[in-house]
Amino acid sequence: MSTETSRPVVPHHKLITVSLMLATMMQSLDGTIANVALPHIQGSLAGTQEQMSWVLTSYILAVAIMTPLTGWLAGQFGRKKVFLISIVGFTVASVLCGLAQNLSQMVAFRLLQGLAGAALVPLSQAILLDINPPERHARAMSTWVMGVTLGPILGPALGAWLTDQMSWRWVFYINIPIGVLALLGLGSFLTESKTRRSAFDFMGFATLSIAIAALQLMLDRGQLKDWFDATEIWIYAAVALVGFYLFVVHSMTTREPFIDLKMFKDRNFSTGAAFIFLIGVLLFATLVLLPPLLQDLLGYPVMTAGLLTAPRGFGTVLASLVFSRLLRNVDVRWVIAAGFAISAISLGQMCNFYLQMDDSIVAWTSVVQGFGVGLAYIPLATLTFGTLAPRFRNEATSVFNLLRNLGSSVGIAAVQALFIRNTQIMHARLGEHVTPFAGSLGANAHSLTELAAINGEVTRQATMIAYNNDFKLMLVLSLAAIPLVFLFRKPQAARTDMHVVAD
Image 1 (tube, one colour):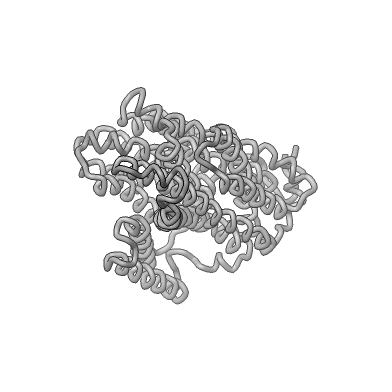
Image 2 (cartoon, one colour):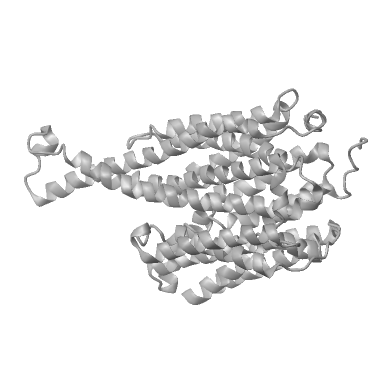
């Protein structure tokens, strides 16, 4: 099928798509699958809690620094070659992580894993946009979004099951069959893209990498160091600001910049970049809040907590199925607005979580939020690139995914900081009302044991209120985003896209 403005579908299109999704899920899965195994890794490798944080931080830092480089590498050597090398490197690094015998090896191999895997998500998006004609971009992006979002959602449940039933090392070994299948599929059926040789802008890469690394370190270590009460955090913040400033000034004044900022002149892309940052905040911040709420506060086992958050993935899959039907006669911007509105409804329900709630409430709100985020994310990924010149595609997909990762880092750091501070504030306020004259609760305080029990209950209530306040913050962000959706400019071919996608 082709039209005057489209091109034929690439041969072996479905096999390429499946292989791309395997690679995408493999990389996105590793962002969360190791989290639940950290206590087991800590015991096996004899590390402290602060040392264990580097197992996660090293991976996140490597991905953040390497993601912007993906566009340049693909232009120089071709997408297929870079993608295949990334799959091999990521799979080998996963095996090495599983074989690690001490903490230093684990951190080094996680760093290698992040460096190798950073290209998988942005290049999979660029390849899907290229192997599909414009009228199929919406369907391709719905498939891509499922791969990107299902990994982090299913990661905790899969990680808990592998750790409980086998060993924490299988959290990394699980990547071997996935990587081999993706490598065989893409090596056999994907054709190489055209290369576009350009000089390497070392100054641009260095300033951006330093800025991203400093920002990531500030966000990861901020809570541990009590944020700006520590000189270390001030140094990270200053380095990040200076680095971003130098990167922007250099990029605007050099002939061949590392990242061509002209892509931001496209209104849809610049608006989409802002929205993907916000989606990173909403999606990943909630994923970070729910597991400790279920495990530490409500006392659910790790496996049960993982299963209760997994329905979020079913909501995303449902959104991808509904997406094409909604687009038949509806402006795509209204679909994004509806996604944020549905996400706000689920966050409103989360604001009313309480200590005696039934687990079905958690599962239901997870499904609703997964549906809302999916409904916003899928058309967003389509609309962002709908009017952007194809020559920017390699760099643009890298920037798009970098902003999503930075949004998740900022969101996670913000909700964790607010959670801890709100818990302390709420504990103090609730404690003011616990006196010998405050009914049965205060009247029972006759010994240290009873005082400790009362303090424990006050802490539980304060913690629940702090979680609710975090959900309220994300509710406000979701509602505030809705009117900004109409900053998007509708692509000229949108009406054609809608009819074909709905077939």
